[in-house]
Length: 236
Ligand code: GAR
Image 1 (cartoon, rainbow, N blue to C red):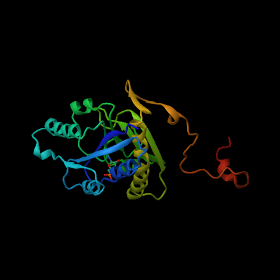
Image 2 (tube, protein in one colour):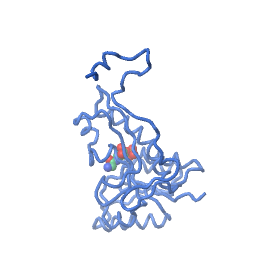
Image 3 (cartoon, rainbow, N blue to C red):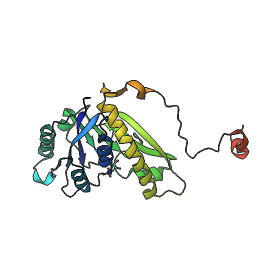
């Protein structure tokens, strides 16, 4: 099988990176992780990648005189590793339009919210403030506009009544670790493709799973446990 050579760009902790590395350790996974690049030499994820035998590079912005030069250095490193796909995993720098254009359709990002809601930073605080009952994460192709690229896959989690920011962040992060490997496998195997600004899904994953996530969870619909008081609220 032709496994797509994939690099991961990080800025810090690297837990999504670790999820991708773990998934790609499986020989049947359609992508192999060939390098991890960080804009911060101290990023914890770099150590974790090295421990897993993945070549790492630190390419710090301060060593370059412009954003274009910095991105050109990253692009050169991607070229040296023969990368065909790029995963942004907590990469916290804006990329230049030229770099984004060059990797169009081949660069994906994970965002901790159900886009197009809650773009940018502090997504969990924003979700709590908005009072949404369902929150989640999105993997999308990267385009020039931040957090606005065509959506590949999303995972939803409930927001519970007593959630604080840390609680909801942990629940979303767990979902991220499941979603990102799935989304990378869709792209690497050609089952999710960017065409004319939209994501086309091919094969088994284009189907409707039939699942519905409702939050808060309604009372059980088993006949003997129907919550009549609850149902009465919907009776005209
Ligand atoms: C993740 O929650 C990711 O979705 C988010 O940063 C975190 C990185 O954690 N990314 C963004 O906010 C990008 N706009 P990690 O380093 O442990 O994967």
